[in-house]
Amino acid sequence: MDLNRPLEAAEAFEVALRASASKLREDAAYGQSLAYLRAGLTGKAAVAAARSPQSLARRNELQTAILADRAVAAFDAGRYNETLLFLQQRRQLATERTDLMVLRGYAYLKLKRYAQAKRIFEAAAATGNRDAIRGLSDVLAEQQVWPRKF
Image (cartoon, rainbow, N blue to C red; front, side, top):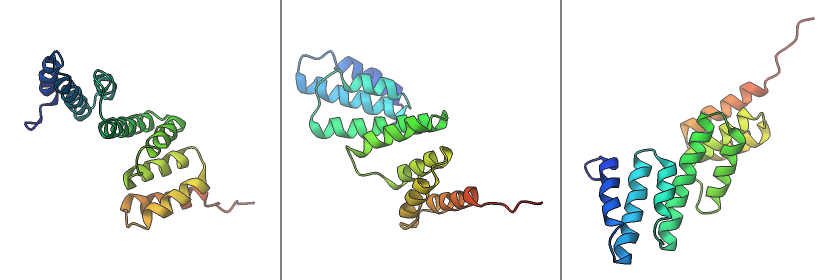
């Protein structure tokens, strides 16, 4: 993992998963999950996380990372309602990061839920986040009513 070769690390953790010691298997499943997350293989990370029981802290850490990755993937695929669902599930486990607040705001914007998008962008913009400020501007531009010519 330190050499930034997550797939090779995942293979090494696979070998460690065959160990007889439960603590070693737990650490290997955790490490393999992190390796797959780093490689962008969210589905494999979720499977690896379930291969051995994890502590509550590790389960929460892995689950929040997996849900964040799934939210981004859903947004990129144009599945905005699904994006909001993943972000809501993640928010039940951990405080929402500003970058994910911005993602939520853009999902609302894409769904034309302007009041919710504006509220989210205003909250994130209050932290000085440039993407949130840009998002607030995007909401206002979308809401602007252009004069009609008669």
